[in-house]
Length: 223
Image 1 (cartoon, one colour):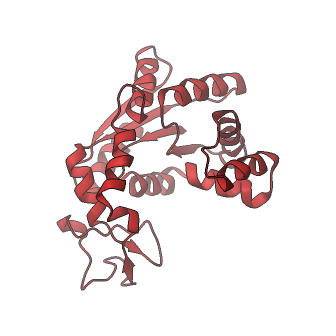
Image 2 (tube, rainbow, N blue to C red):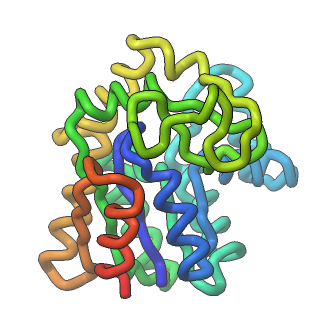
Image 3 (cartoon, rainbow, N blue to C red):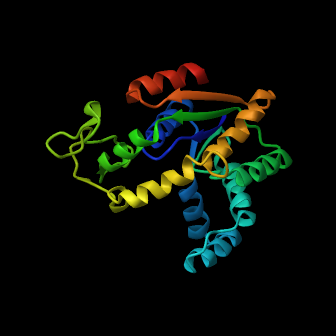
């Protein structure tokens, strides 16, 4: 089973991805981890990407897309869940072309729906567990509020990412995601058209439900 995952920052996408990974024994592949893997291993693509990153430049799609495919190939023998890429419609088109040329199948595209205002509040309220970043803690969501200021799952210390507390930074991230002309939502819509053509299945999930409700909806749709 191969899944492409969309959802704004604050939608619980990382949490749900971790749950789907465990349930279906998938490789959970995040865009940031792809860069770290290739750079850490010193691959040719990693060296090329590092040169751009060190200059503070965006890594070109001509490097990023082969890097994504290489990671999917080596880490997804039993299936994969790709999270955080593509970020725009051009990347979506090129990724699809490359997947077709490489013989990859795409079974599902999942989009977690969440209003922008709600997503922003969730981001500024989330807290990161020092033991496991997938432990959900958020001061603005009653079911997953920290207990006595510590992780509700394991009791470890919590922290807040500095960029989560910067409203301008949060808005910048959401400007990219919610742009349905050129941004990430445009990429999602590209795959929605493919689904209408029978080339994959497109699943929309209401992200305003609690973690268990979203999980159950996904499990039902992916079964």
